[in-house]
View 1 (cartoon, rainbow, N blue to C red):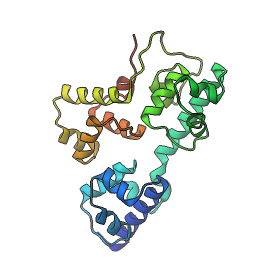
View 2 (cartoon, one colour; view 1 turned 135 degrees about the horizontal axis):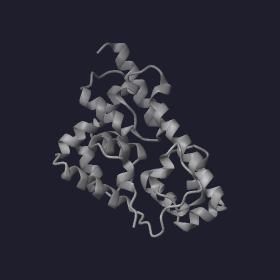
View 3 (cartoon, helix red, strand yellow; view 1 turned 120 degrees about the vertical axis):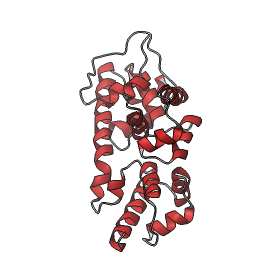
Length: 230
């Protein structure tokens, strides 16, 4: 790999890590790589294996192509579009219900800022927050990710809202139903195997983008995992 490409990858990793407010240690843990690997990569002093680049791209919620691109906008296009969609949908539904941000947040024990950052398109909510926001607004969680969202439509009466742990369990059940090993599912997602293990075994929240990646690997719609009708 030419030095110019190494430098581009290193700059991309450093920029995205800082934008996501991660230390090198935190990124190393998320990607399951050594701390020294991160340091050397960011300084363009290491020729990494492709699997390492894949693991880092996934940990940073971006694509390998984005890390290798000199265009900083490449890594943001998908996330930025989704942030705008979710922000617009949450705002439209909250206003339709006639709720203030404070009132909506108090419905599910969130803080007002959770709604502010989403509606201002400052950040994409974590999956757990998305589930709570959907419950507060009385809609199916996946609807908030839909470009054609109808703010006048409410979830069916008696709808069940999953916990984040239940979402992970459903992903695991779907993988097992397809007779896929963790290693194979991770490979299909472009992840390191340990990342899929963490997804299924941990109650830690994940980004919506990570959940979408897992569903794509299993060839199922995220709505089938998130939504449940009576």
